[in-house]
Image (cartoon, rainbow, N blue to C red; front, side, top):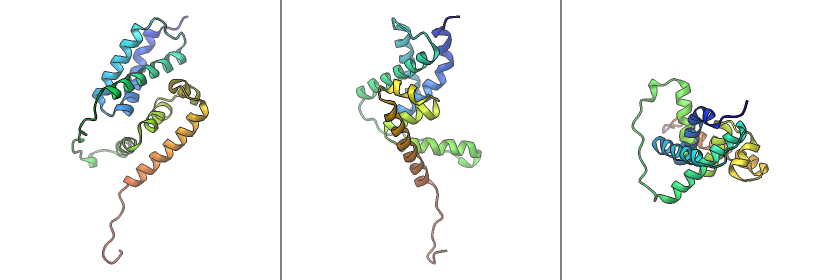
Length: 167
């Protein structure tokens, strides 16, 4: 049975949106980028004929669409997140929010490599193909990105306040 790219695309969409969101930040912009990437993919003359190559190809199209969008737009005012009552969430939600906030502090290159490997589940070689860099570069980038994310999360952790008497 031959690989059917049109049948494989719907299953990829949530991961493509998540990847795009790590690049551009906004969920709405991420969905718009994925829509643009899907239009580009559907208009392409040649489509990879196996699932792994197709997946990498789609992530690369999303990445390129994101880079095109970033180049086009000017720096916009930072949108403030609405106030959220964190006490209503369980520890998994708090952990997700913490990681999202940590990711937001990282440079785009570090967010991108974490999104590909840790969120989308790409292998190092697949991520290298998407980014167009050697596998060794991917390995060093993911190590630095994970350390930076951990440092960002640790820096944002609440620490007990000291009193005048050090108690």
